[in-house]
Image 1 (cartoon, rainbow, N blue to C red):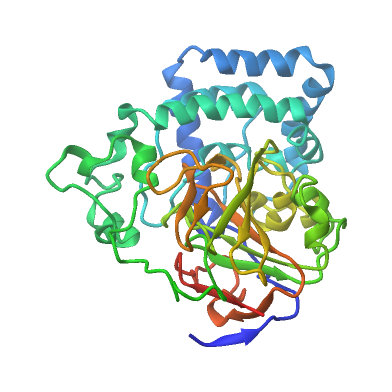
Image 2 (image 1 turned 180 degrees about the vertical axis):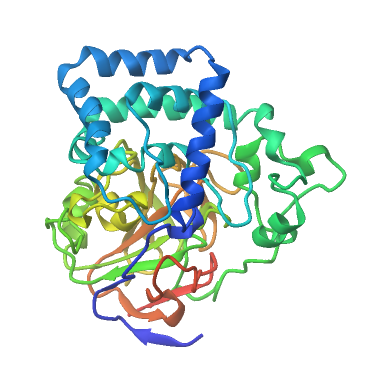
Length: 428
């Protein structure tokens, strides 16, 4: 494996539609939203209790009522991408109608225009308005969204969600989907209904067949491996304890990224960030051999984005650095067996719907503080997705990053997906 020295700070320059979660072209997204609005309104289904509660929160809080009214009114001043058509919802009540409909559906396959984040697609324009930026950063709204997404997760965990696991044009087992997903690389049961998957989420966190992702240099404690199957987004060195993570450059601020835990040990260190594709593997693995020191779930935002990025019709995907500080995320602190590496932190970052972080080892048991893990062992997974993750290292730990780990490419093209458990870096 070719390696290169730790580079100067670098970040992939343009990341709209990262990982294929939403279409690269706004026209099919508008078509999807228009069709979904029609289906939701024609169905006329009564609101789920969680949507009733969401409506009450908006209408009984004067500040939130103002925000949720204005965020739709302010859409009129946003630029509309050429050819997109009118893809804007009229008001918050229509938003609630469409979200209510989505709660009983699972994502469907489309060879070119996958809408893997339907609620993100619903909020794409209003979230970019001044009122939307304010509303979707408030703790009360995010606590409510957590309840909404828990209801959807419950559906995606149920056998009822398997209706999209078929070989029709919109099913995930048709020939085009199988090729795109490289489904033959994953563990399935061809003789069982739905290939043996118990739910949509069970399919989403499918596992590779044994031996397809070997651990790089397993007996070498100098070698650090990739924790996820992900495309490099950013490498930053000499990271500060506190920094202005909300500005255009989105520098990392350790105090906020790590929620105050073990911050001083990492000041001046290095952060590597990479994002996951909608069609890739969604489990996390330990980058080193070591002992689990601390596990934390951090409640954060779901549909926030960096105001410094300006209006982006493609949602919060260009806000990866910012979201690592404010989004719902997990912290896994590992004391490496190699004293040169010492303490490191794996930070799985949830974005939009893809925000359920689960601490689970390879046997499916809860990960425990004090548990020793070998390099490459499973330490958890994103339930329905997960969009990004960071690895945080102390100063003077990284000697070289593997060439494949360096951010490059533009416009969200998956030009360099780093295989999970492959070489990421070598310790100094």
